[in-house]
Amino acid sequence: MEFVYMATKGTGDPTLASIPLHMAVNGSAEIGHDVSIVLAGDGAEILIGENAETIEGIGVPPMRDLLAKARDHNIPIFV
Image (cartoon, rainbow, N blue to C red; front, side):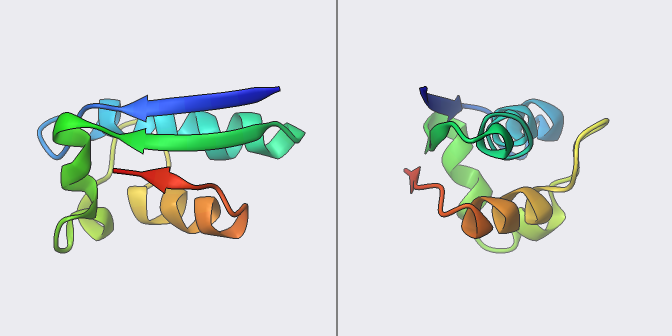
């Protein structure tokens, strides 16, 4: 199956910003689905400056770990 996960939240809500990436890399990609991620609206903030290093939601891995795993799985990220 193919899935597109869209993150529309940024630094203002780190948990909601992290959930789509978490589902993509620790869910769908882990079981072999084709996955891509779209950062739209405030979600684009994730890639600005040091935001990716500092975003840590509640109950999900830190954003830096999620993005590293996306790279490991060769998941395309569109902004």
